[in-house]
Amino acid sequence: MSIIEEKCKSRGVRLTDQRRVIAKVMSDSKSTFGSKDHPDVDELHKRVSLIDKRISIATVYRTLKLFEESGIIERHDFKEGKSRYEPSTDQHHDHLIDVNTGDIIEFVDKDIEELQNRIAKKLGYKLVDHKLELYGSKIKK
Amino acid sequence: MSIIEEKCKSRGVRLTDQRRVIAKVMSDSKSTFGSKDHPDVDELHKRVSLIDKRISIATVYRTLKLFEESGIIERHDFKEGKSRYEPSTDQHHDHLIDVNTGDIIEFVDKDIEELQNRIAKKLGYKLVDHKLELYGSKIKK
DNA sequence: TTATGTGCAAAAAATTTGCAAGAAC
DNA sequence: GTTCTTGCAAATTTTTTGCACATAA
Image 1: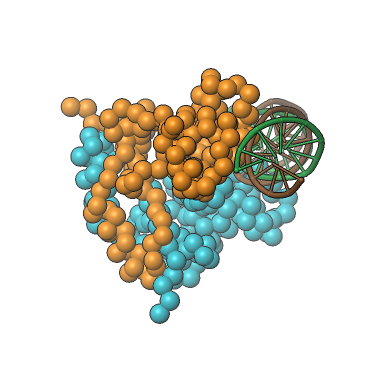
Image 2: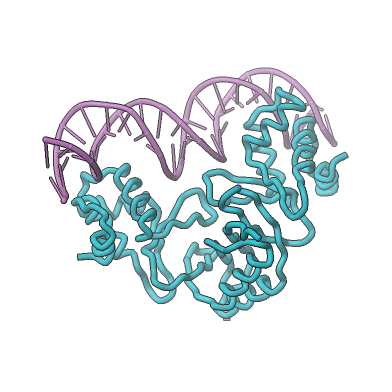
């Protein structure tokens, strides 16, 4: 049983064959080193179709929204039109996007998190969410 | 002559009646205190139409894209479907979005900028752009 | 004059939705 | 059995584009 399927169970999200397939595909959407794959809806639908070609894209959309609202996956809107998804992780992280290749590198930085909290507070706000995306080009050695 | 119209001149962007109107509307899209208005395309088209109702939304789209590519205005994609725009400023700033009211507060923080550079460098990248958005709810006193 | 811009309506692209049929619990 | 989910196709929403006409320099 995939990690995401387990999370559905523990959160009382009803499971169907379709959702199980989407859960598996999302759970498998990991990657090499610090860089993850963050598939978009179309890519997910393609992967899902390899397992069960009768699953419609509408179901993919509905299921991703459901998983996102349940905190099981996360949606990102990087600088392109479409949304990209990744399984939620225990530890919050931000993203660096390689402007030349489109690769996504994840990183964690405690100082940044603290600084953001401090800035929000100074402005009279309680931070409830944030988005930090760095866009960079690789330095050749 | 609006500030944006002046920038067009100095950058060799050809001016038309329509572009002058859009330039004026964007130049006027400022605001109170630290909070700016960041209108979306539809809102801009409405404001533009008050001055000249024959200007089409296609022209608004085309002109905003042109201004953006010339570095005259900036586009943001906050957590909604549509893009919002603001005139470029001398000093880079980031945004805090009030999750309850939708208000946008601008802020400048040198430490954050430095930290981002340092992180990119550590990952082997040269930072070419970034996006930092804080989402918060007002602390009542 | 010559390259560029504009309006219109149609096209794209991403996402959502109504509805009848099917599955979960 | 009742409530929730799905597939399909149609509808929405935001943005782009082809083309004939109009305008800037």
